[in-house]
Length: 246
Image (tube, rainbow, N blue to C red; front, side):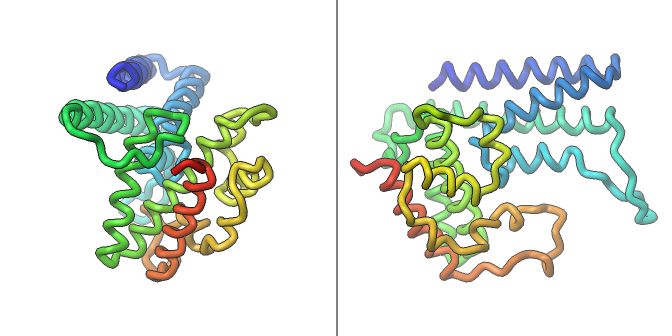
């Protein structure tokens, strides 16, 4: 695991070095290629989840901003490079902290390994933490946060299962472009899961909308405690489907 964390840090640093050089060259083609490589790394580190904070930070780097007078202005390529460098810096800190946390816990019996069936080993501790936090939020009465976290775990394990499925297998880039509903349908067609997701609330299927930082409170979908609890139940069913021995 330590080697994988170091590899991720090396990838982040290599992209950061390229980005800093781009501030001088300003080559449109080079910037576009760099942005695509950044997107690929963010997708890898976030497990393909659009609600993951890193995915959201990456997307927000491209948002237009308004001036003091309320006029919306498009971000320049130089500004986007600066924003993405900041995202890479945040990613580096997060990955490094994960490595420290793993080192601290190395001599303790790990918490229940509920995600050993996940192909991407780097994703497992992230999922463990998200599941624990999601259930804690549900117990604390924070239905909105619980639903976001539990739905993101569900989408991440379905994405991982689709990528690890036997042939024929669509390219990873194609899976990343699919909506949550499309990933559910693909997993059902592939026989990876049964019909448990039929009970998944509509608001859970659209959980990414709850994480939009620029959305107004009035525009946010309402989340009930029942929505969050049903989402938790569906997640448990899907986890059993993907790991029959648990």
